[in-house]
Image: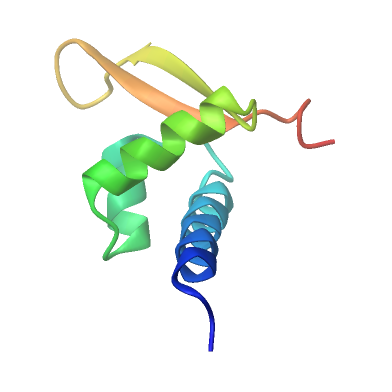
Length: 82
């Protein structure tokens, strides 16, 4: 049986790997939510922030293609992943 702390760590790691997998191209949080299915916006935002702080992803503001204003897009940091 896995201890509760290990189980939590495994779940966090799985979320981060799933998010990294979906960042094969730049994506917004909404796009990531649609691709990952059952993960909440809050959970995705938390893991994106952590991955950004660790240098694995880059956050960029862009002009929105679908509405007025800007959108935030996340993408893999290719330099960090080499």
